Length: 282
Picture (cartoon, rainbow, N blue to C red):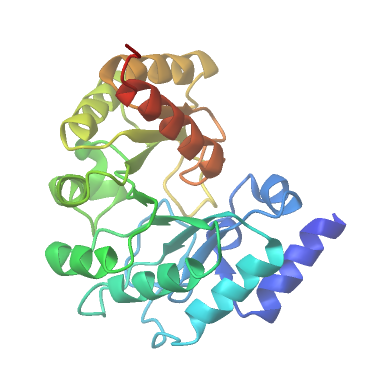
């Protein structure tokens, strides 16, 4: 508990938000106790209102130009070597906030040995411009959550578009094939297992090589209710199917979240990729 308090105090003193706190993540205690956090940049007010998410929505404040440096200072204090940064949707920005992501990555990369995973919004209508900005300071993993099956997008992601998200993932994987592309799915919103498999196939076809699948938990009675609790056996089955489809890594389980054990997943994917590209000795 003392370590958790220290992490919270450090974040507060650097005026930083985490998705762990803002989205009521069930793994917060474990991650903070291990001095891990997924940083939420560009404020904690989202320009969209997804009914599964607990982050506040409305018109956000202007971007804070000092946030990248404060973020880097917090990472240094926590002695992190693998950092995950995500953000609210910033539809009020011409580039969707991509340049701010790049500035944060650039600051973090000034620290020796630090690797960065970015979990980005969909940059609706600004994909090429956003990726241009992101490639100016490339991360080590590019993550964008597909979230759910296309049939449920109108209910769960009214501001999003399934095809648009797939195109964002494919554009990144085509323009930066050496940097792994990652995505995540929530179970329990009303999808069928067959629909999940179809989404997984789409993700592979569009260049995604790393995958997370977790259980949706409603943050409150005002959010989309849980339609089913996916069994541990089904989560294991999804992971097996992901392996068959050619994903380098799939973390699948009830408490798995997009950035949960992100370091370990990146290491697993990197190790498997190295084995696949290893040339046999003569």
